[in-house]
Image (cartoon, rainbow over all chains, first blue to last red; front, side, top):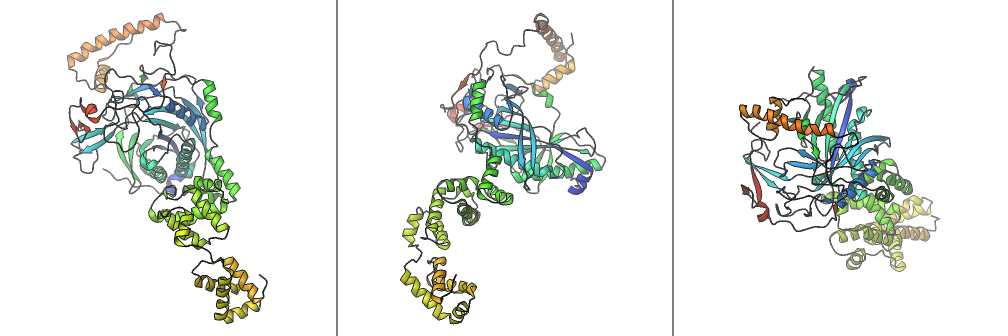
Length: 502
Length: 98
């Protein structure tokens, strides 16, 4: 294997203009496979979710999943595509053991959705329009385990084992037109596009689109052309880039690698490449010479799909608010900056905050808890925010307890700790742990008097007009009450006792 | 009529994973040429108002609801497999050492 010396990113961009094409496969969250009634449930025993159709046994006949078609149309509509009035499935023929039929049922020159676009927002707020060429329906392949090789890789394996539970699960492949004009921001655009697409898929509810689980996978096509040249250069196709960060890194690496090859007077080989998570590099896969040899032809066992215009319009009318527009609306409602909104999005907290406000909490309080204490806890446990064992309703209840003065922030954090530890809902934890702001004015008054007596010099300063010094006395009272006092009330009492206006 | 060349037959044989002898390549080239010629005659008869037919029945939108149906058991699924291991289909080496 030859190691390519990379050109620095800046130098590469000084000489060349990157052109990208992104292909994203989304595994639909249907209950059954695309062409048979086998379950798509995760974690089943090997080969326990197969039937004659998905095993490609003679005499079996596929029938298309209505929800699969509906999901494809909804994705197409959300991507501003035209929806075909009539389209067919096609067989993509190839010999590889991941498909027992020796072909993948896909769509060829008649995709169900075509000619759309997706507007993506970069971190600084700039909106970049990515043109969509097509979105088509197809099916996933089986899962191979390679045995006998050094590292479980296919090279050097003595044989391979196939589990066909995944074979036939519905996939939607979404293909962009060549993305030009992004310049140095190409890797950022690639990442933002995949991120936005994922949000869109989740908002439509057609898939959970969890990249780490392979429910959404991205192939990055990239080529360089010298500045000023119209014609595209030869592209490489980096397969199965399976996180947002990796999409950005893969594009960046390929820009630097192509530039190095071209600068050295070499030519780019049209090939597939593998991405390596460890160091962000790519290595050569197979040379793509047989693109023409899939011998696509119309699938004779499936009749054409001809979605009525009434159905399409019905689906269009029922589309949810698009994620980017929804985020911008929420951002304005919440009164936060684009940067803060990006943090909320990155933390996976948009939906949680909305659910918390729906449960009655003010947005700023909901955001404070999810992005503060709860984000910290999720980080500590290495889990997603949404996977924490606390509900938006419970967070809203905590906000209410703080707002009514029953808890202060410190006590609320203890209540959260209890909820996360499985001690019950906020009210249960508050009761069991005896969390309560000391509101007994007599007890509080005594604590205030004690603090004043013990800190006479500070009390004198406050009497002399240095109101800011009251903080030290508040601290003393909070300490003596072990945090169970309402700090604002304590401050009022101190100033009252010392005869100063707050 | 464009003739089917020996090279094209060899290419198709490779795609279909068929091992053909030299004399078979010649033999099939002639036969395939005849068959394609016969099929191509249909194109002469069909007028422009006859679209290519992929499905003989005027049916569209045959779909099933997204409801789980029973699958085969793993034993049934693997019953026709020439070889199996760990409840999976065992297949020969796919790629050699690189």
